[in-house]
Image 1: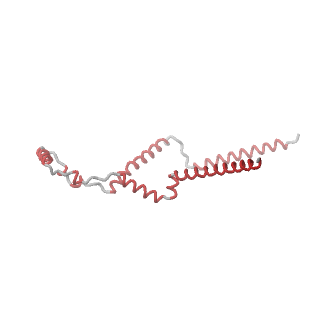
Image 2: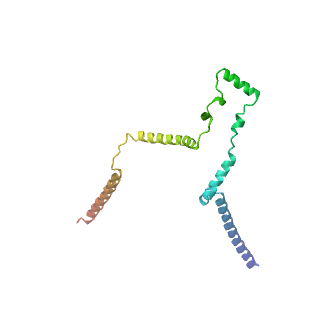
Image 3: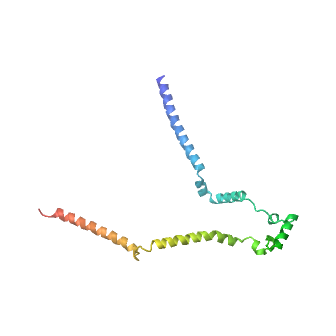
Length: 169
């Protein structure tokens, strides 16, 4: 009976080890599945397409210009007549270029302008901050000189130690 109990204990220990390994494997695979950066590294184009599709679905659509500027009601016509009578221009009286939407280049330029301005400001701040510092044209040479000096000092120290031990007594 003690042999069977020992066998059962051994088998239970083996099962515990296997279960521990299985749980560790499950945890690793769960972490890999939850790691969005890993998915982007493995499938960059698919993630880019998914992000574009999601953005297309989430961004609200533009309202139709004709529906938003529809002035067919009698009240609106009366209001326009009063505005014209007092010399105030209405949206329908503005030139077509003023109401036209911006092109893609103008939109991109508008997006890039703050970035360029910020970069110019950072460069200016860095330039002003480094005005008072001494700049040497041979920046790399200073590091080599320091290395050479430390090597010379080490050599001199070693020679001094040898002379100290090789002196006749």
